[in-house]
Length: 215
Length: 335
Image (cartoon, rainbow over all chains, first blue to last red):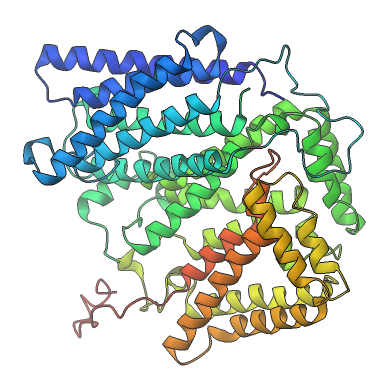
């Protein structure tokens, strides 16, 4: 089975817009000399592109193995960064206002976790549907109207658990965005919370991609 | 739980005057954490509603249709109409259902719209309880606490009321637990009694005391589950085999004790029974409800287990707050 074709297309376009936005943020921050966490924006750029490739064929530009290598390397980088920051906190790199937590360590850990989940998705085969034509609007299992369950789809328990983690992160981050808005001034589109919104959109889309099991 | 700061109030102030009654009062602390868990479950429900099978006619036939039978015609007739609409327009209706649930989850999680999200969740829950769950089988004789009675979705509405944001300055009395902050301790205890008391009734009315009934409840959910979960469920089914009456009595007594425990005068005993409620919810969620069937691609929600656990957490005693000031101008904010 697969979802209606327009749904992954819309989500893929949103992911591309997020990737473009993070590139624009990095360019503008460099031009204006604003303090932006380039690594965080870069991983948002990478994840957005990778997730769009899991949704639609026309964004399937790199093989899952290459994506897994790139994102896995980024995740390891963030994990190392978190370890270093936890040993030697740097007040100048405070992550307050990110929505994910109150410190740079938490931001780095969240980024590492997000990369880890993306690697799992790539290796577990979350990919654009191979079914020609949509099953939406039809009976997927004719003649079985008394059945409650559809055993043609089965998710790995780890995948479902990770989808729950992603959803949990999304609501916690959204709550954190409001709290950070009350703490201080923002810089419009270059504010930390704008990239936090992008991260929320990405993790919700990742949860969708796991549960929709687009294979 | 701390009160909202002036800056936080500013951040949660609505831009539109008409929405002012639905803004503010969203503080941090345990209550907000419970609200966020509820938001997470709503968001998960929304994402689950985007699963491929939900866009097929199977959703109407396999999820909605089985809940219609046995209900009085005044309940069943509108359900039949809704079923026909969903069956004939599966893509449009499912997209709407999913978007509404995602929006409710995100609205509760975002502080300026938390009240709006909770308010919207109540009529939506009631509508789904009726048209999607057939009132949880309460009137059709199918209600069984082990499989989700009185209907998981009605618990969302209950939680929206119990966890309604309360401005600390507007609190009229110290609350012994979070669920009492908005509705008051007496009403909250009555709601707990009704909820868990109804589960006692449904335990004996569901026919689970008949030979093989309990094992049957478990084994019907085993097919298609991951191996480790199927193994747990099969072991549980074997354990219950031949002991249906005894286990039903034990469950009934346990639920009755949980129902009245909120009236116990001893805090330690109340906490003990809340732990029992939490453990009961967790056990039925895993062993009978199979995590709501989320591994099978047709789950619309995680079923009643986590919601009953969340209700229990909302009744966990709050530590004694600051002593109320004797100054009448300041003692309200001390609560």
